[in-house]
Image (cartoon, rainbow, N blue to C red):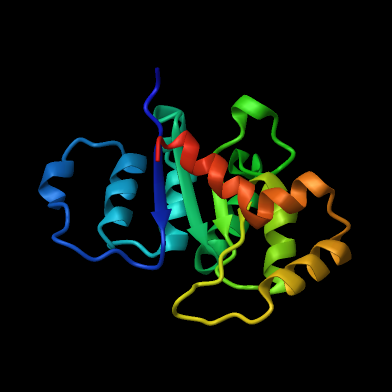
Length: 171
């Protein structure tokens, strides 16, 4: 059974750090992963390096969650010739496991996330307790109506995708 990992590139990481001297001989994609985990790369840079550096091929069970702050990296990667194999039109086993936490209720951001990685890879986040969102359910339902989402897509974005992701990680 493959071990599944979930990495949340949520802003910048703080902590003791991972000494770069231990990365000698480590492939560039994996080096980018460790540098990202230790705050040496911004979230968009880290995601782009992971997508283009072969990390997903080597760590097939890896699941990565990025916030809206890293969406620039998602858009940059999605614009590559193969879309970094994260776009919603990539067939099952070849699709990479990148999930976007919306980190707020911006309708353009949520719609862009759905259009890029697919409704099954979008997690609705409010950045609570930093931001106190008002009328979350009503606002979310209004957006879902505007986007014409199916019932399963609505349930996924509202919470089922996060539960599925956490179950996959063994949490």
